[in-house]
Length: 108
Image (cartoon, rainbow, N blue to C red; front, side, top):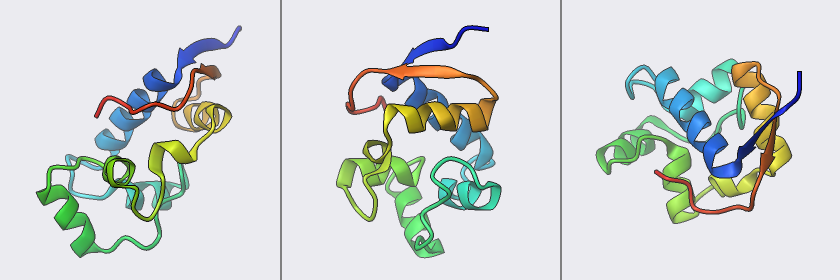
């Protein structure tokens, strides 16, 4: 089966949607989900409950989004190459894709 070609923006949106789903409506941080399930970036290990609560209060659905906008402890979506995003897609969805495009601000 040939690989699906997907843009960087599309794959980031797909991963974001799945991470939000896995957070059980925002009850858990995406970092915790990634760390516990050993998926995606494997989790920002230094995030604490107070930081997560502040990010949620400020309206950020995912720490990745806040980190991307503010360039905090990680570079979030910009930390990953197209090949890494394709591998995350394989891990999370069981899909073989080829990611194309350049790093750009995702639709948050």
